[in-house]
Image 1: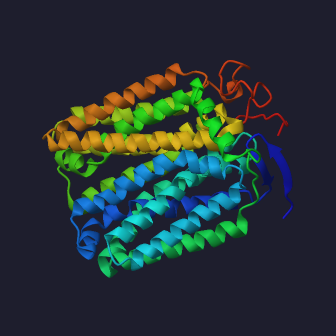
Image 2: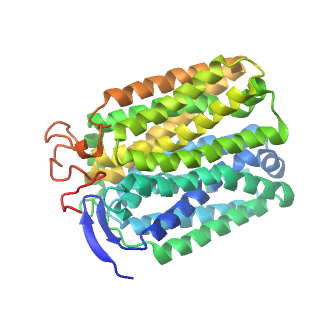
Length: 437
């Protein structure tokens, strides 16, 4: 294979005709990670019975996981920023494999919780380096599409991975399901080891204290703050309603059983389609792509907020638009992170991971409070309001979400965290780089 080693502001990488193969390997790793993360949701009754705890305790496996991932993402990513990204990604997936295998033989709830927490520590750094890794492997001007390929693993995990793992757990037990997911993670480690090229870290020098000192500088970036604000707002809006999507569809469309499952499958399939469009659009019109995704979530939730009971067609259509818009949004947001912080991609991505986890936890909490108070019907309207504010921020933050890829560079000195970059690397995700690739 004839490969040429090149240098970009995002790291060192190898470009060649087979560049799609590493991206697919990264997508499979994302698939396994999301499947493992959501596994307790599908197997909640079986885990509760097998571990002799209440179902609420199993719910904590998800809540504590999200909290641990959010709290650890920045410090662990900073610690690992001097390591080659190839080693970080493979190591994170290896930790996932060990976690699943420990869960499979765990004698009690405490061991299962400990295994989940250890995996959550790897989760934060995995998602922090995943998109920067994809961008370095992308051909010039196609970082958005490369990120979309990798993020397809997320969508397929929700469409196929979690349902299949849940079905396996129902048939053979939750321990068998954990073993299978662990085996899939081991296979992913083997695939990544075989095809993933060496991508050097951006921050190869300096001690941990110096690398942690770069975090406040990133936080002072107005552009990065805008991206994180959009993330928190839209994700809160999404999860406020999505946590109870089955109940909403059952109420509005009168669907249940297999047909309800088919509607939820349609949500996932629409998301896969949305990923392809988002990857193409964000490489050309970043602001249009991000705004379209946020507005799609807003419109879908607005439709669900106003639909009359029994409106099956409108409800199904709204769910499809919702799936397409929200699943594609992380591609646009992650591309924006890399665009505004090309020389600190890992740290900036860690901040984005924290923002996403805050959105998940905040949305789920808001939804649970409303449902506990008997206000299920208020979920879509509440989520719509938050998503609408996020869409407004996208339209207002022109530096973070430029009109076109060729206007991606910020003027030197305009933004504290990106002033040091200047105009040497203005089009990392567009059609140019400093090296003219």
